[in-house]
Image (tube, rainbow, N blue to C red; front, side, top):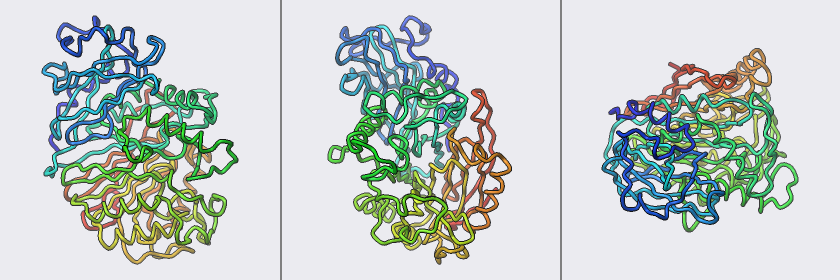
Length: 520
């Protein structure tokens, strides 16, 4: 991979990324303000602050969606800002200088579609009012279609704010990456008391309280610094609204369920740097092509899924889990994914997946761990993995949600031959890497190290497709993909210390054409 200049500017961007707003006069003489044309408009808002930072989302070969938010209070209605985009860190010779509107109806958020940029290039950007400017951000556009260069993607999931600090994001910001993917549970509707106290905003009921979740989470400087440094692709899962909700139901009675769900979606789209599909305003599934090396498929396992079988039980035997016709993805998304996997011209197909796909057996009789994962949707899983086994080469599934660390091999039924009480597969379909939570409670947090190690041994005993398990660490994953192999490095970060360091706890690898996992 050709190293860009990102490492040389990281320190400057990190410092800018943790600053809520910088007065124009505070910038050094060597950093031109470029106050000309739209950037010098007398109608730009005065007194703007940027407490939630900036983001560049859903990168393309020709640009990205640039995001910021100006809190209402310094203005009555909409607010006008300027946005500057340049290949230069000091923003000289800008590619884009344009005015944008922070709309009142979107709570002061801006979603600016930066276009016309070069593929595989590094860009810097900033939002500006009359007398204040946002932190400086950077992102990289997707690699050109004919690129055979290696690709590096960071993955994180499950970051309960009160349960731990976000040193993970400080270390993600320092990684050399093409983009960062959130596999879901960016915010939590509930709260677990932890090192950062307790969030009293429990189960948000209306749009303002749902918005407040994102404001709280982005009060963290390390999270803002990560967003300032890398292009970002978010998936949603369940905690952005309610734990384990499905298409039409939550596990507990919920008055005005659909209305509250709609407010949760509104807040997510408002606070995330994502473009919307004009014909399907809540669609989030999409694919990104990173040259010839990787096509990344990001799926939605939540808003189309049928209700979980057997009352959403855990560690149970549930015949209904494999009933034909039950869907995790919904028909339209499943057809899109199947067509995309079959037709992809990329060497590697990487599936960003919110819930575990491989089977997870917890007992000698074949009890499955959770009905909310693909274990509760066995027929559809078999359909997709059979397609992968027959017609899709080099599939890597990267998964969130579980809070623990797993790496394993995908068979066409979800289970390897010899799995107790479950139908063993006959064909390999790919591999799966499950990244741990940033801070949300894992097995080790509840059972301690001894209890977690005992559970790890049981998982290895009952799941022959499982090659690595760690139920004690927190952190994130970095996937590096070349023409010949795909490696995931698990980075371990102590969630209990704001200044925690980082270590590489495990590395796993799958070679081209193998659909096997090697712990290296």
